[in-house]
Length: 167
Image 1: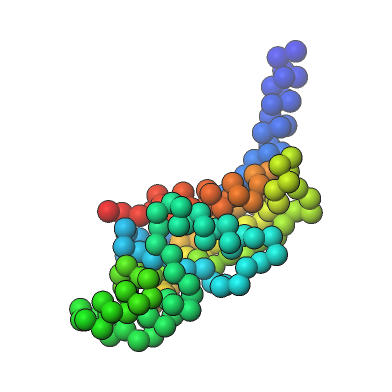
Image 2: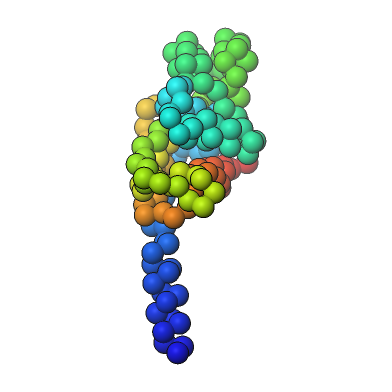
């Protein structure tokens, strides 16, 4: 009887497991309390992933600005100098530190169907965090075969980002 119970628990565990991988590529770039985040797309997708992630970033206390604002600020900045223009750009484009702006790029595939709470499920979910000043990818990750709903996956991404932030 105990063996059957063990097999049942093992079967359930394997079917509901989340295979996730999170990797830091560039350890020289640090996320900090002044980092600003943006999403690769300003338009929302049909299921609300970008809208939900944007709101979760803000609710978690992370600074967020639109992609257009981030690109305009970086395009007009003066590299490697502290100056008043950069401070004005930061204020105008809702950026805390123009040297610390990061883009989150998502790629995901949905499962056809919903969980018990009518939330969408992702079959595969990939993300990249790129430094907009250098264009280098600094973090990436994936979550596959998840039984977590879309909001849970996005929340775990926000928590992963918060865990990378140094003071």
